[in-house]
Image 1 (spheres, rainbow, N blue to C red):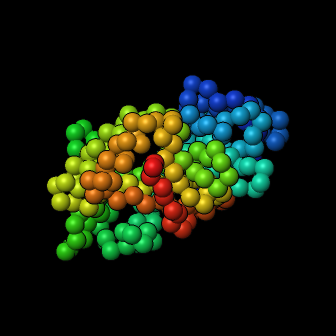
Image 2 (cartoon, rainbow, N blue to C red):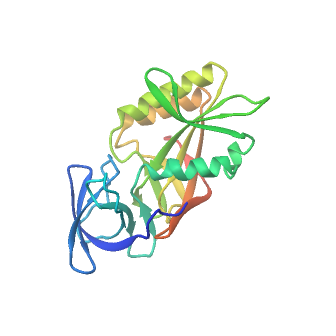
Image 3 (cartoon, rainbow, N blue to C red):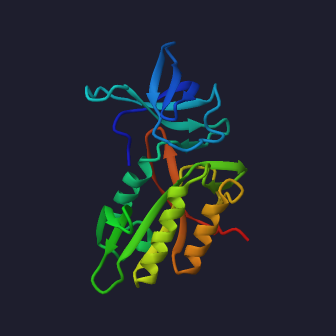
Length: 236
């Protein structure tokens, strides 16, 4: 999936009010960018970081820039837009590029299920169990090569695990797909020290039949594509 508009580099000045960031463009202008990430962005919001912004000329948008990437000193990238994974993954699912779900020709997004929730994707195919797929965007890394989820407490995430477990108990296929928006990731783990309740909910859901897979991504300032499946470890 390519970005709608070519990205431009900048330096982060500060992130504030969760969804706003001040940035310094290479031509010396200071701009305000929308930050589509409700998490803590641990390790990704330090002033001075090289970031990439997507400009827009949409008159309906108050902010003319969206923060999309962090570029690390080692040349790797992290995607910070939590809405992007679902858009990219939908295209990959329709193209049957996710091996674990390649047998499903029908892909629907944001389908109501559980109690007042929407599952990210409902996949259907004749002769197969319906597959309820919840997607989690992973950006945290505290050790080289190790990506973790979540980066802050997520009561909503724990509720989603309980609802997926209920789908599995009802005879459906249920899955949580951790999509890692980091090009330096080699494996994925649960940050149980950050949110013990989520770690417990995920472990319980897995025991109830919920599948867990993780995929990396290929990220450049030009766009984002699905990467290979990565090993995932539950808390011991």
